[in-house]
Length: 97
Ligand SMILES: [Zn+2]
Image (cartoon, rainbow, N blue to C red; front, top):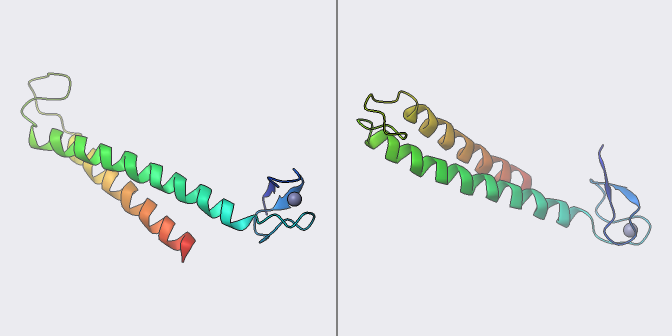
C-alpha cells in the first residue's frame, strides 16, 4: 500500500484513502487525475509514434535517415505504438471504471 503526501498537511496518507484522516483533504480524486494525465500523455506520444510509423511504413523505399534500402522496423514501430495506445486507453478506462 503506497503512501502519498497529503497536499494540505504533508502527512503521509494511503493513496487508497478517500481523504486525509488528519485534515480531511480529499486524496483519491487527485491520484486519479494524476494517472489520467499520465495516460493522456502516453496516448498523445503513442499517437505521434503511430503517425510517424505510418509515414515510414508508406514510404519504405526511403528510410528515415535517407538510406536507400527499406527499413524493416517501421511496421513493428506501428504495431508497438498501436499496442501502447490501446494499453493506455484500457488502463484509463479500467482506473475510471
Ligand atoms: Zn492532510
